[in-house]
Image (cartoon, rainbow, N blue to C red):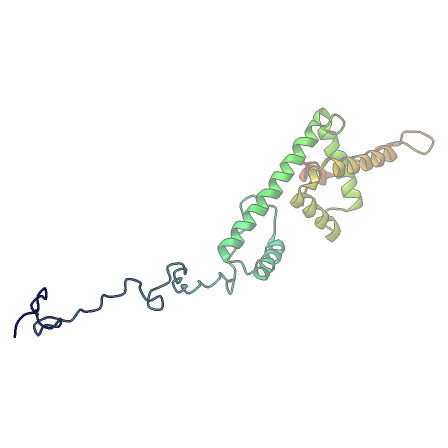
Length: 210
């Protein structure tokens, strides 16, 4: 068969037997359902088991600090307070020592202020102490329950050196001393004989303790 002028020879079918079919290209956009969300916060690790809070011991073994003006009754009351607050023995001992130190510091501060006072301190301090104990021994004798209790309280709290308390007892003692030596009409009376016990139990603080 004659070729048609201008027609190109037939090169065969477009799908050649040895040609491989085109494979589809993978989609460049990842599947959002399969990709982790980078905006989500990372999951927190599982919390560790919390340590058990400290608890009060079955029995406290506390000791009074050296030089503290506290007694066994104070220690028992402190132990009850520590147990109410669920303190360990170590915590309770530390607070007890801090409390005793604070009381001692307060007493020392009161004493320093008293010694600087121009009326009751300084050169008048010894007379102030004598008058204080004169009043205290008359109103609350040493050796009685009330007398021993107030002396312990004055020493324990430091109020035996607190100027307003010392001044009050000194003024009362001065009034009592004047009543002993002067009658109602101003006549001087015969002074009492000294008590031998005064020499055995001298006083050396504003208001002496037991």
